[in-house]
Length: 201
Image 1 (cartoon, one colour):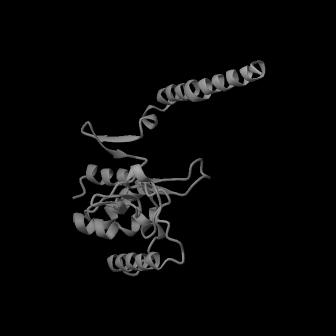
Image 2: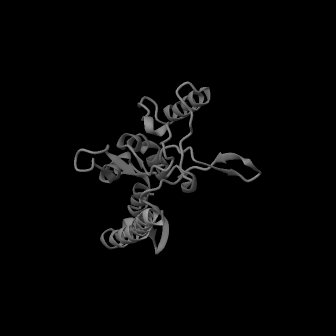
Image 3: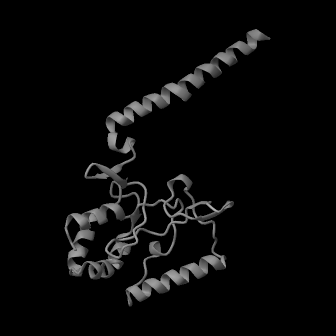
């Protein structure tokens, strides 16, 4: 019996070594060599300090900045570990809200967000990605339409002409991958950094 079992054990050990150690190690070395920035998390630095990642959204509350889309990621409630509290862009707990199309809570939240945005920019259609959450809750990008919708608020808060902000948004639009995949998008952190760099106060 040992004669029949021994090859199976050897194959299992060999495959465990190859697929569990050698392959991941080789891919880590290759990725770190060919794509060093991406392998390290696409970190963005300013004055030598890490301020975020191009791959993970973060919250911006000041009217002088463009906020990203809504995030439904939770964290443990510090007062009751059996419950959760909202924690936007919590990379340790990527998730959506699990609220479906028949959810009254979702319908009420959507109406509240749409009404708030319509008051901010009357007469303009509200882009859907400004009122809905992404599946991961970590999306760093918004649509060009969502960025342009926010231009009047940002321009007013900075005391600059809207045309200056629109030009900056247009410069930050990334097209479809290979001209085919995905949708045009604007990385919110990159846009806000470009706003500060342009000294549009």
